[in-house]
Length: 467
Ligand SMILES: Cc1ncc(COP(=O)(O)O)c(C=O)c1O
Image 1 (cartoon, protein in one colour):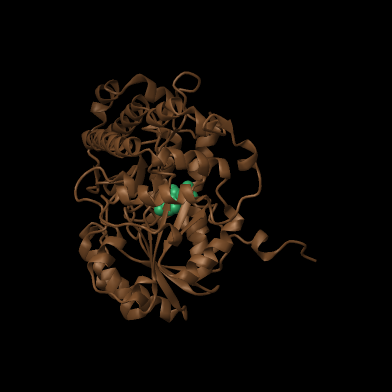
Image 2: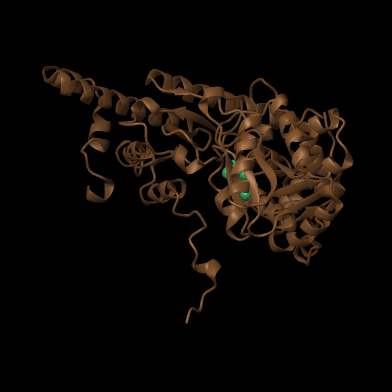
C-alpha cells in the first residue's frame, strides 16, 4: 500500500532539469578565488549582488528599523506577535510607491489591490490557484524561466503550453505564435485560462515592446482570458528602450473594466533590491475577488513582520530609493557590457538586451550538430571542463538548440573576468582542436598560446569526479 501522496511521489517538480542539475554541480565544487580557484563559477543564478554596499550603508545610517526599534523604543513584542495576513499598511504603501517610481511614476498603484507573498514564486502559484483549475492551461512565450515548471504547475495541476518564439525576430511575441499556442492547447483538450509573460524577460534580458503589449491585450480580450505580467525585473532596465509596464498600456488604452480585471502583475524585491533571501513578493490585481482570495491564500507564505517593518522604512526613504535605482542600473549596464565584450572577443554573440541580470548567449556555432543532444554535450563540457555553470536554452524550453543564459550580477568583477578567460580559452582550444584535425603540424605552436591554468584545470578530458 502506498503511504505517500501522488504529489509527494510525482516527478513534475522539474528538479531534474539541467537548470537545477547545474546548481548541484556547482555546489559540489564551488569556485573560490583562494580556497578553490579551479572550482565551478556559478553563472546560472540570477542574483543581484552589485549594490549590497548601498543597502548596507543605508542600514548603517538607519540602525533603528533593523534593531526592532521605533523612536528609541523597542517594538520587538509588537513585531513578534501574530500578524494579520493583510500586511503592514506602512509597508504596502512603501511598496506601491516603489513600484510606481520604477515605472517612472507613469502609473500609480492602490495598496488595497496589493497582496504580499513570500516572493514571486508564491505570487505566481497563488495566481494559478485563483485563476485556473487543475488541467487548465496558461500560455507562456518561450524561452521562459525554468522555475515556472515548478511554480505554475507542480502543486496546482495547471498546464503550461508554450508560445514558440524564435531568433528570427529576436524572440518577440507575434499574433501567429499566440494563435498557434492557443490551437495547440485546444488540440490537447486543454482549456486556456490565460497568458503569462515576464517583462523584462528572463532569460532574454529584453523588455516587451508596446506593440507586443497591445497585441497581448487584444489577444486576451478576444479569447476572454487572463494576462499575468511577471515584472520582477522591472527595476533592472539599464538602457533604452525604457520599461513599459502592462499597467501603463492598459491606462493609455480604452479597455473595459472587465479586461482591467483580468490583468494581474507579479512583483518581488528579489532582483531589483537583490533580496531573494528576504522572500518579499506581491500580486497586484484590479479584480477584488482575486485580491480577496489571494490575501487569504497568502497565509501559506507571509512576509515576516520584521522584514516588512525594516523595508517599510527603507523604501519610504525617497532619496535612498531614487539613488539606489539609478546607481544599480548603471552597475548592471557596466557588467552586461563587460560580459558582452568578453564573449565577443571569443567570437560569441548575444541577443541585444537592455535589462536583467543575464545575457542570452548564442553558441549555436559551437554545437557539433543542430540538436538538443548536442546542446547538452556542449553544456556538459562547459560545466565540467570549463568550470562554468550556465543554463542551457532547453531548460528554458527554447525551441532552437544552442542558446544559453549566462548570469553576470552574482559575482565580483574579478570572477567574471576569470569566467570570460575560461570561455575564451575553451573556444580557442575547440578551434585549435578542429584545425589540429586538419593540420596536425600546427598542434604544438597553437597549444603554447593557451594559458597554463586552464589546461591544468579543465582540459584533461575527465569529469571532476574522475580527477
Ligand atoms: C521571472 C521570475 N519570476 C519569479 C522568480 C522567483 O522569484 P522570487 O525569489 O521572488 O520567488 C524568478 C526568479 O528567478 C524569476 O526569474
